[in-house]
Length: 323
Image 1: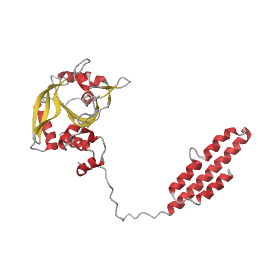
Image 2: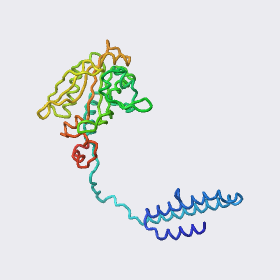
Image 3: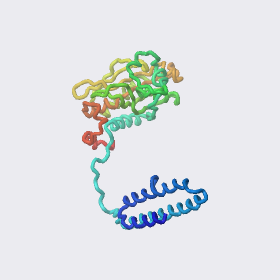
Image 4: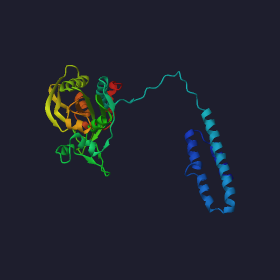
């Protein structure tokens, strides 16, 4: 033990940096250091001597810690103090918001300005909330369209953000307005236009006498925020089990009509499932594919570009990082 102490003191004389000091300290006081090994060897010593040797080892450990701390203070004293008046250095590649989050934030800001409560729902979901409560019973053909991913515990990765509707309406009484943003998962091929993981924004409103006109006005404000006030929007008939009537929204952008999102009036059965009387209340709901909006707005042809973390691609959005 005396040799170890003298050895450390001698080595400390040649230490010139904090990193070298940390390396030396780990050699002796680290989890796999020499002192830890000596403590482990105590069990091999005769019990009559073990207590005394243990006391001396603890003294050695304390003495080494004091020596290392003293050396650290000496090194820190040699560091030149920071001059706060000196100009800062610019960093290359300062972080920016991802284009998906730029688009999502713009949409959520519009919804918040209309009084929507922004909430969250779980990504690992119960089939009950993901399907049954949304009027998609077992063996319903819409389940084949969802291409679900199931877990060993019987739960699943949510295939859409629509379960948020159910969870929110079960906890809040109408009138209500709410929206959420998050990831959804499907067993899709990963190619230029499909991804097994993507992002959606879900919105719903329930009140007395809500009509398709209210839904139309809300979605037009969202589209205008992303594509400008002169953009043309049209609503086409569609089908979703949890809305009736259901519609697809298309936007006329840069010379062509583009299908952008799905929406509709909340199905009376869904309202009944959450204990809301459809004879007294009505509501609308919509689901927005955020990647779809971002691809159209920024003219991105391959969805995979969002997930590759190519700094050249991400730097294109620097000017919009505070939006």
